[in-house]
Length: 160
Image 1 (spheres, one colour):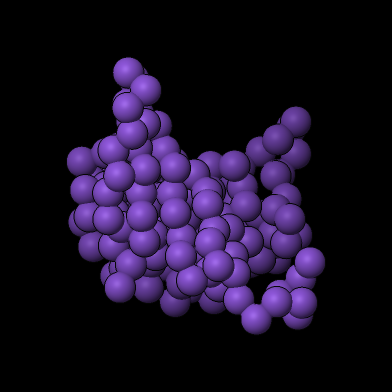
Image 2 (image 1 turned 90 degrees about the vertical axis):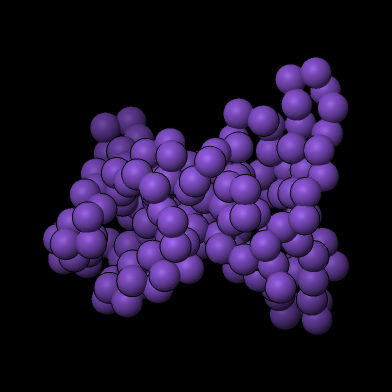
């Protein structure tokens, strides 16, 4: 099915690479961040499943923020990200640049605490050539965290 075939998606269920106490997320370590963001945004309800090891005190704690960029804008995007304090490395796979399902590259930005995820995302998206970021701020409705003992904690997400 395509988006042309349905008026909306009832529920989107996906994982996350980082989950902060506010219910904001970082996704994209697997490389499909833009497509996952489109599907999640098109859904009436976005549910996130994550193991306890994905819970962080603040987004960016793991040191990596994926940013998808148009291939021909790779160098200017890297330079602009650097001015934002986000030095980056081109994601590689089998010795070649990793290409997303949209035909773009991913820059893995080195980061520390992202205390204002929506603002940080807006700054990054303002860079010509950036297609999307791994910041999923105020998108999740419900977050389910599995503990090491198998228990599941259900949290409200940050979506309005």
